[in-house]
Image 1 (cartoon, rainbow, N blue to C red):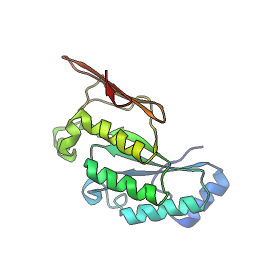
Image 2: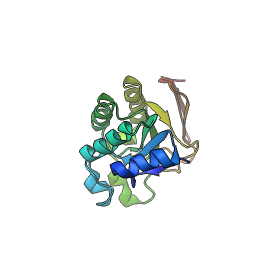
Image 3: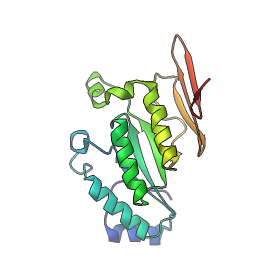
Image 4: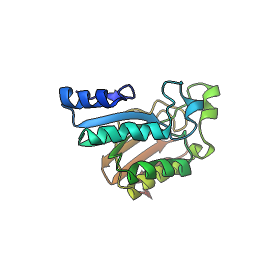
Length: 181
């Protein structure tokens, strides 16, 4: 069994989950490090301090791995770096699950940070994760259209290799391990 979400928050709940379910991974949905009150419901918009406290409880419960689920495009690169650095420095993250914010309606476009409209933003996210030695995982087909188009995909083949492929009418971009080929 593998639980992903943000509903298990108390020490009792986290310890019960670890002991009764016997899962190795505690996966917590963070989505964004900043603008949490703007982007999320009151229930989900807990502070970064509260997130860190929950992840500390999970670490103390002896989960082998702690992962967060994150939506790329909602934070600036600097805010992403600060958030990852904080979690990494406190040993509160082993892996990150990626999703790309994909506006399905025009009003959702304003949720993206301006730099997320450039493919370089997504490559820089990977560089930051490599810098802090944070592993990546994600579903194999999560891109549903929008900023990167319906034919885009991001594939992490190994812990240290990123392949980002974007097909446009004019060009095919393939970035593998930070090199455009």
